[in-house]
Length: 310
Ligand SMILES: Cc1cc2nc3c(=O)[nH]c(=O)nc-3n(C[C@H](O)[C@H](O)[C@H](O)COP(=O)(O)OP(=O)(O)OC[C@H]3O[C@@H](n4cnc5c(N)ncnc54)[C@H](O)[C@@H]3O)c2cc1C
Image (tube, rainbow, N blue to C red):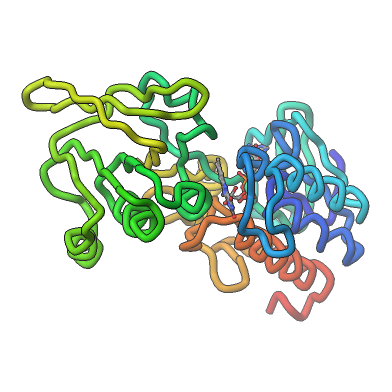
């Protein structure tokens, strides 16, 4: 069994940042990534809100982070999936589809995945009008017509955010009331450029090169209508990739986000979490980076300074 100082699960913005700080601090640092390294940053067609890069392809930003982590000496095992964790003892055991490793500290940076609605056109137009993140992509729709899908808090927050940018925001929701905090609902009602289609679902997203319209279907009558839109924001929830951590005893909130304190510590000593897998309220590249840094420095203190554990 290979021994490392620090093992990081996931090579996205959080994991790579943790890797940079871990390796630069002199920790023998391993990052395990089930796909190619870079994480969801690489899914963003263009990133315009990461400080220092006014406009950069998501894939380019991801490549820069990977190269940076490697340069500092962090070792990345790509296409290797973590399959189970044993975190209770002093030495944490990380099993993968290839082998197993041990280390005194582990950072879980396994991200999250957006829930999809599985309608025709969703996959085809992803990144070409279909988005899952209002803060990320809302500014690309300044002065345009946008449809938000969903009726919970995230759908309402996205609607409010985009209503300050787009000319017209439509919301499609299966029920006849929102499942969101009252304050958000009241704010939406006060917006002149928001129209809600209650008791409707989205049946299809259409376009040529980019999105041009969406088909809505009334869930009670079955009637359909065509709505001309430039973008569709799917806001039906996000699922953190925290199943392995939960099975190993890491505490999560309802919904599966890993509970962390201000130093990214979980309930298990020597186990940290960073990025979209946590219950941090903001899910952005910048926040994932900050959390990864904090987790690595905290892990460093835990590993190298025995008095710190008391
Ligand atoms: C389409 C899109 C556009 C976006 N645009 C922006 C934007 O413009 N600006 C912005 O700031 N944010 C944007 N975001 C959000 C941003 O990408 C995320 O908040 C951020 O990248 C999260 O980083 P992370 O490291 O927590 O997770 P991720 O980047 O998701 O990394 C987690 C990694 O863990 C790996 N992993 C998971 N489970 C395992 C396992 N069992 N074994 C091994 N590896 C595992 C995954 O494969 C993944 O590579 C966008 C997101 C999307 C999807």
